[in-house]
Each structure stands twice: as C-alpha cells, then as structure tokens.
View: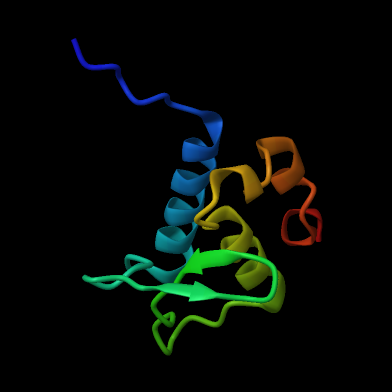
Length: 89
C-alpha cells in the first residue's frame, strides 16, 4: 500500500492566493509551463502580469507573493494573512 501524501493547511493558503488572483484579475495567475523566480528572501511562482485593465496595489502584490511562495513553511498562516496590510486597509 502506498502512503498518501500529507495534506496541510499551507495548501489552502496557496489555493487562497490563486483564487484571490483570479478574482481581482479575472484570469489565471500562471502561464502554461510556469517558471519559478528567486527573490531576495523567498521563491515564488512567476505570476502573469495582470490585464491592462487591472491595477494591483503594491500591498496586494505583496500579499499574493506571500500566499504563493513555493516553500509551504514560508507561507503565512490564515491568521497572519488576515493581518496583512491589504486586508487591514
């Protein structure tokens, strides 16, 4: 019998990031054959630029990058995400 992969709440955080992007941009956040980008302190999937008709604030971009980090242990918890300046403001 094969062991089932462990499910964890960071998967939900990833999904929330994808859904948030879809809701505000009305498109999917990743292109086919997505690539990873390495930033100073975290890795994240390279998001598609939003459509020209959509302007993402720097706070929203930051939140999306946090939610979509490749390393599940680097993603915020739901409580931490809800304290992000984008939600608070």
